[in-house]
Amino acid sequence: MNFIIFMSNTISDTFKDLGFKKECALVPFITAGDPNLNVTEEALKILDAEGANLIELGLPYSDSLADGPVIQAAAARALHNQLSLEDIFNRIAQLAPNISTPIVIFTYFNLILSQGVDQFVTRVRLVGAKGLIVPDLPVEESEYLLKLCEENSLELILLISPTSSIERIKLIAEKSQGCLYIVAGTGVTGFRANVDIEVKNLISRVKSVTKKPVIIGFGISTSAQASLVKSWGADGVVLGSAFVNKMSNFNSDSTLLNLRSFCREIKQALLMK
Image (cartoon, rainbow, N blue to C red; front, side):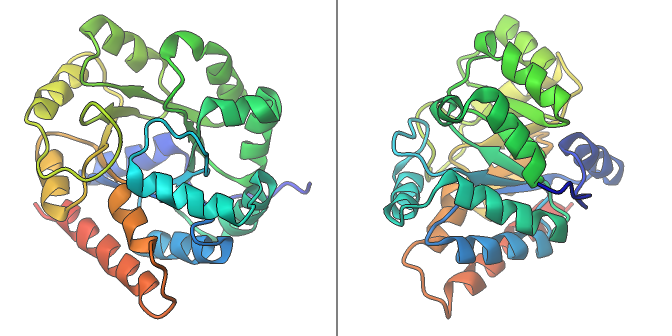
C-alpha cells in the first residue's frame, strides 16, 4: 500500500484549535455501509463540509451491545449487503485525503480480535483514520491497545460512565488519548426526552481531575440538548442515533439533504454564545 499524506488534524490538535476559539466540537456518528458505501462516502463529505469537528464511523457489527435499536438496525442493513471490513477500509483510504475532519473508528473488541490486534491498528493508521473508540474495552484491559495506538499515531478514546467512581475516572483520564468520552446515561444509545442533570455534575467531576477535553454522548439527539450540554462545560457533543436516523428509509432525493440540514442545525446551536 502506498503511504499518503492526510489532510486532517489529529484528535488532540482538533481540540487545541477549538480551545483557542472557545468552540464546542460537533461529533456526528454514522454507520459505515448504511445503506451502502457510496452513500456513506457522500454523507462523510457532507458532515465534513458542514463543520463536523470529528466524525465517528461505526463498523457494522451483529452484537453491538452498547447500541440502541436505531444503530442496530443500521448495522443490520449494512451487513445485509455482505459488506466486508476490507471494503470499508478501502473506501476510507480513498476518502480520507479529501476531507479535513478526523475520522474516528467506533468498533467492538471482537472485531479487532478477529483481524488480529496489531494488524487492525496498523490498517486503521494506513487508511487515514485518526482514532478508535471501543466501548466494550475496560480500562484495565486497554494497555496493549493504547501502546499500539501510540506507536501508530492514533488516539484511543476511553469511556467514562455515570457510575464511575472518582478513582476510576482518574485512571481513565490518565490513560485516554485525545479526549475523554462521557456516557450521558446508563443503557444503550438512542433518543431521550431529556438529558439527566447528573451529567452536569459528572462533567464537573471529570474536569476536576483532568485538563483533557471531554465529549458527551449517548441519548443526545436535538439542538436544544446539544446546546444544554455545551453550557454545562462539554468540549464536544456526540449525536449518533439522530444522525443515523436520517439515513434510514434512504431516498436519494431527500436523505442527504436532510442530513446536511440537520448537521447545519446542530452546528449552529453549538456556535451560539
